[in-house]
Image (cartoon, rainbow, N blue to C red; front, top):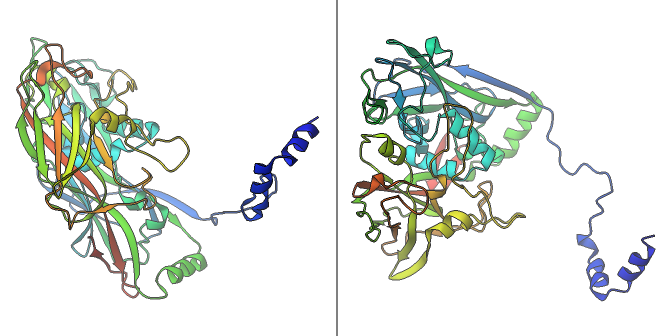
Length: 460
């Protein structure tokens, strides 16, 4: 029945020309195994830090990775314990408990290899696809904050019954969004490498945690600050057969030191300003980038940095706010000047099918009664310098070294009495702002073939 179609195809000059390029022809119905991963073992373990008592503000907690297998994933697990006062529960900003983290560092022989700050974690999170962002949000209890939006937990069972001394224990998960947990060819081969240490520095205080007051409207500092406990690192590794592992090590390091292209995140010094009054033109914040690295992405977002005092403020403060325009200037030229909403919706181009990569829309997640809509990942704006949003290969970058005064300008949306046009309330009018600029940088790391020592060798 399809013979007429085949006959028609045979008369087509275009199809005849394309079919003559036999080297590119693929027969999809021919059985073949083009790619196969060898059978391997897998383990997922939880292990304690070397200094479990380091849970106070600004202290550093560390773990030494066991020298077993190839690291595929690392996640921080911890408990936050809270005692209510007079039945009044905690109130959190939209990014949940992420403010517990000041920075996460991967170290080798006291040398910092990779770093994440809270701002860079948010930047990496905004690049995740919808399902992965949802998991990240749930692990950190991100939600649309309200004074009554965070329930109490009777004896840790989540029942929500209030009492004068209602003990709460909340388990959190912080996934490590580093290059070696993303691309398999950058995984840490701990059996060969020199000892690797993971360090987590806690935030300087817990002032981001607020407590609902008896009037049902205002919030204040918690009477009993939450306590961090039960910190463990969840480590997922893959084990190869001894012969396969020896062959892999020989292939990687047998010809001498191995140089690898990796990526990391760097947060520039924050800029501060004041939000415009209601109905006034949006203020413009400006930051001159001081880094001279090679960068593949520049992220920018602005948040209100003041301490919330009521329901409207806790729902708006500490979360990315909508911008009207984003500008990148360097060496006397305007390189990028575009509507910020365009960057948020269509700025993450891909080389794969579908035109665009992850679009971090401000969507409703609705996991359960403790969670609502996460505020505003779409307001973390990414200026993509490469051709693809895929971080598993290099699709292009720019060098900042020879650019004169590269500067990011962020113009805020105009705010009215009812809030921004993009679903953020008016509580931030005339309030203090903080502008974050995060760079996704590229660099070469070299691993010594004899000792497994890792050093960063080139970054610009």
